Length: 496
Image 1 (tube, rainbow, N blue to C red):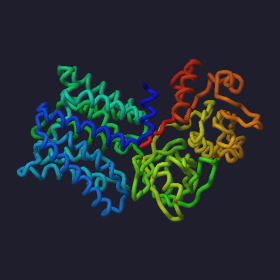
Image 2 (cartoon, one colour; image 1 turned 120 degrees about the horizontal axis):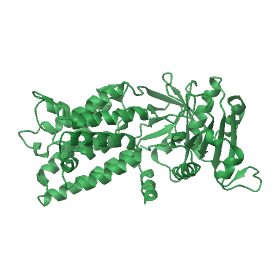
Image 3 (cartoon, rainbow, N blue to C red; image 1 turned 180 degrees about the vertical axis):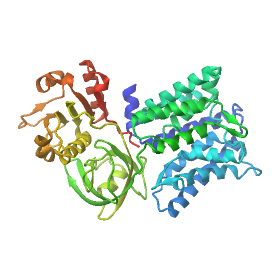
Image 4 (cartoon, helix red, strand yellow; image 1 turned 90 degrees about the vertical axis):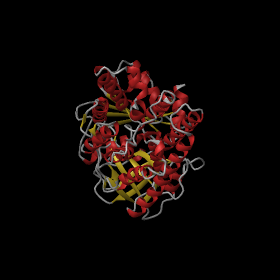
């Protein structure tokens, strides 16, 4: 079952998962309202949804033109659907007709106005609810917190959290909020079902652009929001609401997150393997990231497909390089609109990259012995690290196991071999489908191969990067060798 779920999640972007999941919950809400099981009428809900969708997309188009920014239609739809479950649908009347459009415009404006270098700082839905609250509208009622929708919110929330691997954020948030509620004497079932705990924690707290970049900071972020979320603090007309708790945390997260937004101008493409290309871009400023981290890459597509116009890819170059390299596996027959546009880029065309994040980085201890395990294009974070070591004249004890289907599928092979000795790197190639002339290792990485090649593996830190199935299998192998989980780092691409 887990494998089936992961295969599904890996076939869809985060944005599309959010759209589909929220749409399913919307349809269910309409069904329940039709039978009188929800406090609002179907007509109120339809008008509310139409108003929010229209004003979110309309203002998204307007602000994108005014600020000369790349527009993401899916982002506007997600914002509208989230607002639909947060704001009171009964406000879709002549007397209060301004509230819902105002909420939509405020949410979309926050992505462009409350932004630094084209990166928005605050969750759009949260800031819209806070601003409406300042006007005393009472529009933010979080009506999604109803027992009827609760099972579906839980299932969808788990899918979202699994997709982006943010259990280390959601888990501490839920635990701390629940414990605070218990200490306050609140009934646990009531707090769980009748508060927007799950919806808030899995669908809003997990937004990557307004969260910290590093895992440790993300855990603290979850704990902080959990405390603020569950404490019923109020002073006069001021009250600490769920939306305000998230806005406060977003502001604090900004100071510990990557702030750089790059405009990258296309320069050239090199065919590394039959299916992997290395794209070279000239940045508009000096690039700031740690070798092994990934960026969110955005292409201004005229017509995006179901996978959208954004992707997360590891940078395939060193921070010391004047140019930025992006290594991508391409599938000409089944490729997405994003990858097709990327592969057909012409001189001077641009894309944008931001939100450098990830903890798949070298340890600070230069004496720590390392084992890198790469599968296919999963070699890119290691190639970034290796280039950085060479550029900074560092040498470490590293063994790289590089696995591929055939001997022609090793990306950056010649380049790595050229500097391997200088950085202390030993490369072991493993081919799953060898030709008759292949004389290297075949099959898969095993305990026997580790014993033979790295007899001191128990002293080393392991890094795994590649296809999910390969990473999962090798992770299990390392655990059977009784390696401490803290000695194993896994690279994961959220696939937004």
